[in-house]
Image 1 (cartoon, rainbow, N blue to C red):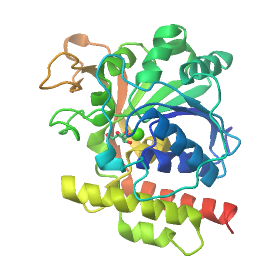
Image 2 (image 1 turned 135 degrees about the horizontal axis):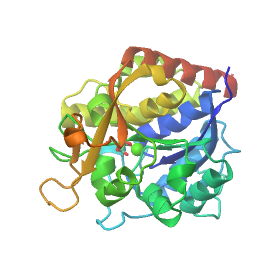
Image 3 (image 1 turned 180 degrees about the vertical axis):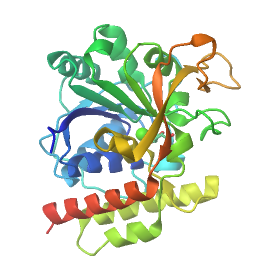
Image 4 (image 1 turned 30 degrees about the vertical axis):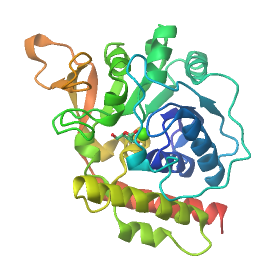
Length: 318
Ligand code: RIB
Ligand code: CA
């Protein structure tokens, strides 16, 4: 096996974020260097508490967690409690963590870690991009130091999930997304176009939720709320597990096919705020600023995800 991919996960846990944290902890191909927490699905304070609790649940007591920005750069705070529940983890009730967040700000952690290992660190960004944007602005060398950013966000050729034109992570902080898209950093985009079809179903969840198995219990309680939301809001069967799908690209890139694209984001119009304009034709000889996932092997990913959750459960709670 190749050396593990060294990653930072910038996240707004959130139900699917929590599944991404567990997948990172369950995947030997990944060395999770730390969680940087951002506002989004819930408040920063809720997301910090959730991140710590999920780290403890998943055997990540040794992984540092850094609190980041509690609001967007310019826009007012937008949370998604209707999607992720009152405290951000659906119906799940995890014990308060014994762990504490690190004292360092998430932005400084991202900069320090990337500059200490040029070309080695992948930043997986599965929340609004506020921390990432501020880090790029505070340290101009960061774009050249990161191996790449893999982000979950944008709606490139599909309706959005927050407005007809905007996906949540970009909508929540479109100015941050603009900074990332224009930074020159090597960028992989896992868009809502793809992840809305990556759905975990009750049947798969039931296979995990065995008596006395805390990870399966957590996944069942968290995703029950999330499945109910997807049924009510989208008419979907199952729930879109956007963030673990994006994470998997780091260690299984052949799950997807990619296309170069030039992406820009609307930051002025109240009607189309957060709209990601994707130029796949690279018209006028435009240079691409991202590689977008255009196909994804969902069945293979879902069976990997369920298997990894089962293996993690057996390792931690035999
Ligand atoms: O639009 C889906 C994205 O927004 C996911 O990352 C979800 O967790 C929310 O952050
Ligand atoms: Ca997220």
